[in-house]
Amino acid sequence: MHVGHMIAHLENATCNDRSQESNIENFYVFNVLDYGAKGDGITFDTKAFEATWIEACKVEGSIMMVPSDYDFLVGPISFSGSHCEKNIVFQLDGRIIAPTNPKVWGVLQWLEFSKLNGICVKGKGIIDGQGSVWWKIAPFLLIEEYEGDYSEEQDDYISSTSKGKMPRTRPAALKFYGSSNVVVTGITIQNSPKAHLKFDNCVAVQVSGITVSSPGDSPNTDGIHLQNSQNVVINSSHIACGDDCISIQTGSSAVFIHDVHCGPGHGFSIGGLGKDNTKACVSNITVQDSTLQNTMTGVRIKTWQGGSGSVQGIMFSNIHVSDVKIPIMIDQFYCDKRKCGNRTSAVAISGVSYQSIKGTYSYKPVHFACSDSVPCTGVSLADIELKPSSEKKHFYGPYCWETYGELRTNTTPPIDCIQPNKRIPSYDSC
Image (tube, rainbow, N blue to C red; front, side, top):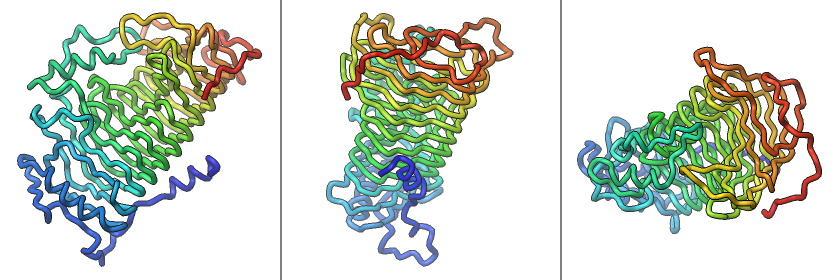
């Protein structure tokens, strides 16, 4: 399917509308209260949710109802679709809260939907990960450089020293694995222990009208995390978190993001890619008509030294930034710990377009740090207007290293460090 047609198809996708019909047939609706859920926020409702799912997933187009005005305490659960019918709706109007008892945990996920064809999570409800019990961290461990990301070593420390000795492995709040035709719309996800919404090995995904909310200093709490997923549309959403608002990892392609507000957080990021000498492939990513406020970076590509593969066909367009530390960044020397070894190989970055990126920065407008051996090529900039935040006093100018491309218009400030495109051997191994 052509990318344009794919986007239109996904944006027109709707969930099963039976939940809105006045003459709804009870045959299709499976309410968790009817399967023993208490919804008092104290009693564990995990088994009731499991029992409801077993019955709901037998019926094509069924609705699993989580009603409003109830707080459901639910432990780790997998809504597996191995033997399920298609097009199931998870109607979330109440509040699902995560337990804070360490004995409940020890698995990699909290709420997981897997191996489904046609799954819609919709409603006006809330998923609350109660992540503060996982986030406790000694102040000295915070990275103070511009990068500001947390390392895995810090991540282990965060969890192992948390109140109540929570397990080191922190789960995502809501995860989809190995599924197709996925819709998430309307819901709020807040205070996740780690990533809020995660897609792994999924195809044909639409996320719209959701809210993600966690404090800006909550560690590793990505808003939306994509990996090995294709044909994804994310739009009309508000994301506030302590890490990347949207994180795009290896194996992701045909991703269209628009009308998303990010802040606080670390911006819209592709990567980090190529860690531990791995191969990474990302292509055909568009981010447009979006805003970032008080974030660490704006639009960023980050790769580790020593990796291979490629990032190509990237478009950042009509992005407004307000008091963003570094609005535009490519970093092929990404390192989330105090020291990383030098490597000659790198994930190749080519065909990256920046159009109409405007607003204010608080540290540096542009930072392009590309590999000596695998330079960035085909980097184009047009209609860039970035001015210092009036509250700040110390700023740096644009920085480029081994960055080849073109300025299609004059820019503010002048970005005169881009080198003219030259013939460079292809390093794409994807």
